[in-house]
Amino acid sequence: MKRPEKKLEKYWYAGVTGFCVIAAAVIVYTIFNNLSGLGSVLSAVNSALLPVYIGVIVAYLLSPLVNKMDQYVFIPLWQKIYKEKKTKAKGVARGCSVFTVLVLTLFVIFGLLMLVVPEITNSVSSLIRNMPGYYKNVIDWGNHMFRSNPKFAEYYTQFSGVLYEKLLTWLQNDLLPNSNKLLTILTDGVVNAASVLMNVFIGLIVSIYLMGSKENFCAQLKKLMYAFLPTKRVKRALSVLGETHTIFAKFISGKIIDSLVVGILTFIIMNIAGIPYTVLISVLIGVTNIIPFFGQYIGIVPSAVLVFIASPSKGILFLVLIIILMQFDGNVLGPKILGDSIGLGSFWILFSILFFGSLFGLLGMICAVPVFAVIYRITKRWCALRLAKKDMPTETACYRVPHNVAEEMEERE
Image (cartoon, rainbow, N blue to C red; front, side, top):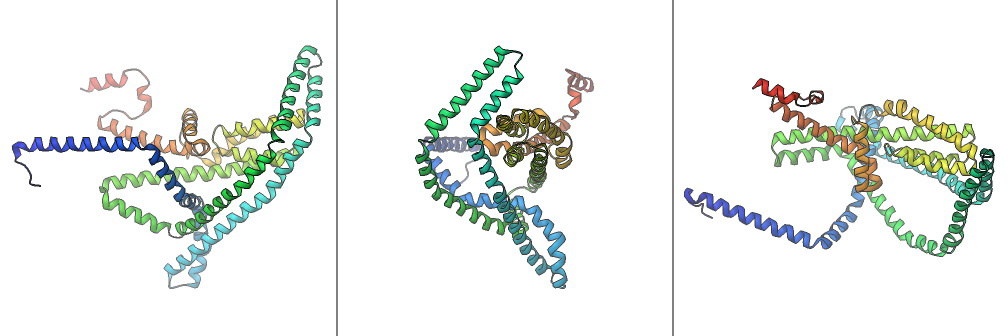
């Protein structure tokens, strides 16, 4: 198209702008008018990419171990064999590291499942079998505790009886009649389980390729960014990505280690104190501890109820011991392992967990803190740059007294 004369140039640009606005409006209307079809397409794409998601997550979590294996074990070993071929030595070392880390990880997971799952099953079966005796223990404990106040003891007995009757009604009228339906659901779930296993298997294969050539994939991504984006923006984006990786790696690996230690300490302390259902409670406390802030309460409350039903006195002892352990974890163990990888105040941690948890459920609660920490740091840095351009202080303390910054700026002018 031949460019119009300079006199009509502004009208030509206005027409092109109007056409683009109308076209964008039509596209947006078409998308929103076909949201159901778009949702099905996105769902199909997500299902197809699920093995890739699994592979990326596995590769990201295991890459630090692969790097350690490379650095301290296999690269020194293969460099002694291939003295003049350092590139080949690194390639063979990477393959050995990936294979070793995957085998060890699968072995540890399988071993833990073989040890923990039967114990959990036995604990649940024992709980159901001994429920009448536990109910009697709860009633006897309440009558002994409130013997000086017969009226309160009567209320306690009535309340406990109502709860026990509701539990028995649920077991007899809901669970047992629906056992056939439950078996049907489990039978139908075999196909889904096979599908899940297939996705996990393909995801492991994807993770092998990602861990084996992660430096090459990162280089290709940087190449694309430099090809299509301004250099200044690429450097800024790479800086943000590097900081994001640092926050996520430290937080996730630190939280997993912290939760593992908490689970082991819970098992040891509960065994020494003679608390019932030790394995079940230790697994519950350790797993829920991965969730920041709320995780401790999510694990403690059902565990305390479970122990209290089995033995009221042991339930009180459990609460005392677990509160001491959580204080140790929150003030000593957690900060020692996690360090200052978060950089958020308590309010922002609570806000991020509530917000992302409501949007994405359990996964959102686990990833909320590192994601919000990245957003918080980016916003803080951007705000500091904007204030620096206005020749205004960047320290928050300067803005605590009302109008002092504005008055200072007026004095400068």
